[in-house]
Length: 194
Image 1 (cartoon, rainbow, N blue to C red):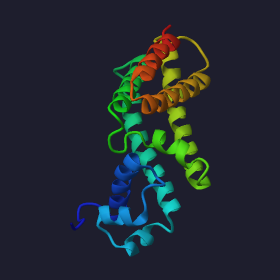
Image 2: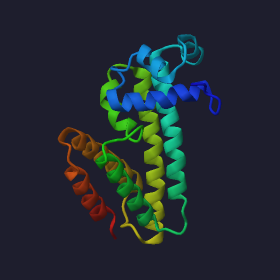
Image 3: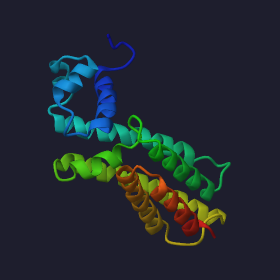
Image 4: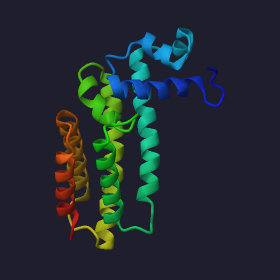
């Protein structure tokens, strides 16, 4: 298969997403990745100095795309701040409850796995998560300003909600049940409602 419509680097990242979400970072060896991507080892090392650097690039690429989608939703001026946030959390529940298809839950998959294995990947996850919390903070403030969200500290609320949803996502993976996510949605509504 000849990759003509996208860069080889992006192709390796895209294939890596799919493999790592299914198998985990540690379980995906370089040979498996290269075979699935149908690229020679030299191509991999042209773009990435190591598997760890590949992992860091994978996380950065994931968050770049995730932030663009989040910005589109959170900048929708036809919705209140509360509606934007609830649409986000509903989508989160749907994605997680459907079993993390493709790269939709890379943060949940990698956070526990690589936190102690790779400082560079841990920091990339931390920075990416911080950027999501920053966007959530702005959206909470928007909701407070438009009266759709109860007055509260937007930063603390955004951090707490993000952490709560990550925890519920982990419990969803452990229990193969959306119960934790559904309870988190109910709690989220109670926290945000004015």
